[in-house]
Image 1 (cartoon, helix red, strand yellow):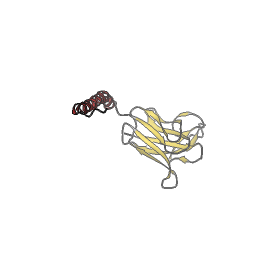
Image 2 (cartoon, one colour; image 1 turned 135 degrees about the vertical axis):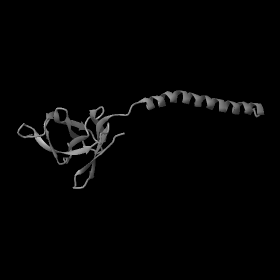
Image 3 (spheres, helix red, strand yellow; image 1 turned 90 degrees about the vertical axis):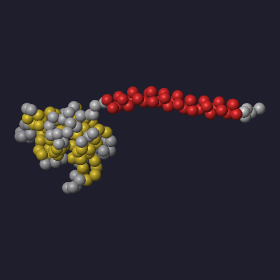
Length: 172
């Protein structure tokens, strides 16, 4: 026989809100430390390159250090992923980037000539590349405006002049 007394029904309704309140309180108790830790996490500071293509891309970077010009590479960045090239707050205002599509050919380049090598490299200086046993490549300049971090995104979309686009932004 089914219990349809008001007392039985009232007990179910009275227990419902208490159970929901307990779950809400438990959620709040668990969520507050999570939100507090997210808020306490400092903002990232680095130079990142994101590869928005489907291909593997090789990337080289150039920058001015205290001892002079430096170019280094290759970072291999799989399609649809990002990689940090310089960790920590950026120390220069201008950075230079050159990238090659390892699978389909093509490149993201610019008018600033710097030195690169076939294999992993770190080259001091940007003059006489060929005479010193390196290759010369055209790098694109990125003015970070002295931001602490920066992100460049490589895409398949053509920019003016028919080259694939590489856009840079404050990566916050």
